[in-house]
Image 1 (tube, rainbow, N blue to C red):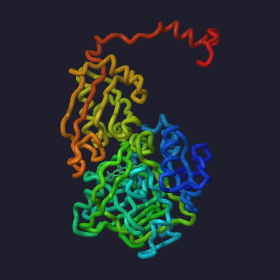
Image 2 (cartoon, helix red, strand yellow):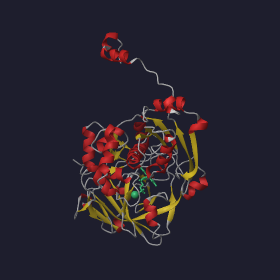
Image 3 (cartoon, helix red, strand yellow):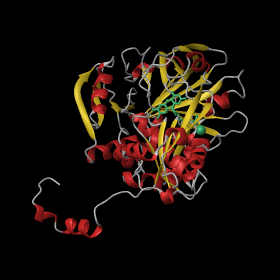
Image 4 (tube, helix red, strand yellow):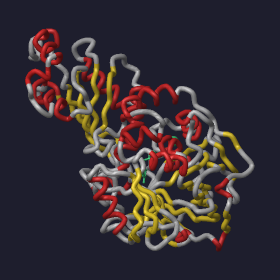
Length: 462
Ligand SMILES: Cc1cc2nc3c(=O)[nH]c(=O)nc-3n(C[C@H](O)[C@H](O)[C@H](O)COP(=O)(O)O)c2cc1C
Ligand SMILES: [Mn+2]
């Protein structure tokens, strides 16, 4: 049964021991961020701040910060995430439109709009302001009418204006570039059934309706309602909806913001969204994420869809497992295991992965044989140690698509948004596989006997 809304998911998290309530008053300036940081470092639960900054509107963070919680969101288990993804997304389920819904319980128009009705933290020490960190930006292509949903960080400039950072290759930026001289309508929905947020950050190619993919992931179409002031639809069960427009030619300083990379990035003039209407549920809840150095929620939210989409769309046979590590910010480092069909197949698969839409941001890619579990750093390191000759097995590809948030790139390039990075493929599969040394292990019969008679040895704790 799909979660009807964010509240249903929250109830499930609480029921399954994945949620902690913070009853104490916690300051929105820096203190919420510091609590989130400590809990993320400890792999702790999702947090519900009951009195953030003295507000009566609760603030919820860290909901999808671990793979087990991510699995709860998709009503499956961590080991089934990829398989379920591939199965479910093969049948997109377009949303339906309903007349009204809970997100219309309160409607503020024009001057009445006040973003400070929401508890919005200043997360990290050098952040340039308060940030809405878990938005779903809904827009339409002005030419084709295709919908896009995505998550772009949203800085609060004042009570009716926000600033966004959407990289030039993001779909909202590509859509907006088609009519640069006209106001561009955007709806920002907060607090949704987790499938919608998950689909919004997934690397679906342009033209894919993420809302139909959310329907596929949850197994039921998303119910949408029309906006009050702009020609867009939004999820009927959203906690909050901000309806707005990006005015042409208006830029305001945006940043700094402690990002999923662990750095603040550049503060630069960026587009704004003028909010024309704010609608929200009775007893609204504000869902957010703490961003910053991994471990963080972003790395899981980026990793799982990237891994799944690679498994779905890389066309070469023999791709077994894909893992995007937390330390790699869920985006930059990947390990894939393959069934090596012939010599040279490791690098061939490496090129296919880097060339896939979901693989476009990978910087360091390690290819291992299928006897290695890509999610186990010790096994991967062992493959690097014993199967790699750097002069032979490392390929460097220059000036490929990079991330403007990667601090290792030149500032001039990052500032344009069009950053270029080099990429590395490490082929850590066995070279000359059929003649490669044999992996040592105990004799089979002896090992089976030890398993059977383990108690006999009297070794505690194993
Ligand atoms: C928590 C979180 C925050 C994100 N913030 C941004 C952002 O500020 N700017 C950006 O360009 N992408 C951001 N992303 C990545 C995009 O949301 C993601 O790649 C999405 O698939 C882009 O959708 P699009 O291809 O439809 O533009 C974020 C992802 C997550 C998980
Ligand atoms: Mn998209």
